[in-house]
Length: 41
Image: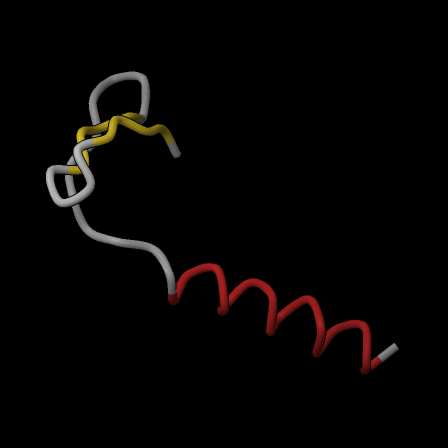
């Protein structure tokens, strides 16, 4: 059971590490000016 908890916590924090700053619109989307793309979270 502890191994499952560790894996879940690791996955949670790993996804937070790749998150980036930037405001989102009412749909949860924004322009990525570095890549020239528009994406949603």
